[in-house]
Image 1 (cartoon, rainbow, N blue to C red):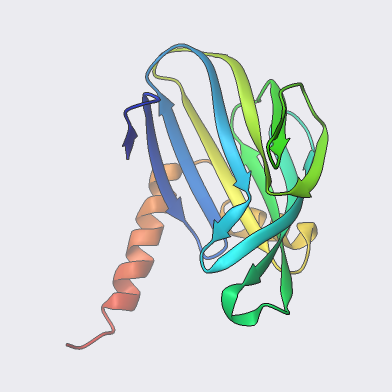
Image 2 (cartoon, helix red, strand yellow; image 1 turned 135 degrees about the horizontal axis):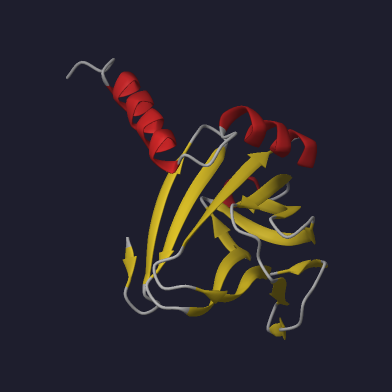
Length: 173
């Protein structure tokens, strides 16, 4: 997928519980990767969330979500997000209030964060892994370690394609 407006090529692949992203930036200069924790996630509405900067390559947290079909039942989805290139700062927003200063932590409803790179070179690539778990941040970390231990995007994409082909090959039409 090419994002014309931003000059970014975005590629995605996944394992069962880890999304792997690869972004190539056409222009040199500052760049951001946005993690939106408000709005819809599949069929669920994301409610409040919490994000902690763990280091220069990692953030973790959770988002509470509620599906339209089960309005009285909240589910807490935990995540561990890693990038292969250190980011310079984490910034964010809660509802309509922008927090455009370096943050170590952020909580609230209808929020998100962005990982800021003060300067990327033209054509530079940043990869990101997003591991999920319903059991806690430790579960998300275990999923990331077990399912996507390295940064071989093309190898993980080939594995995902093989898995899909194996599963779809079972279907008789």
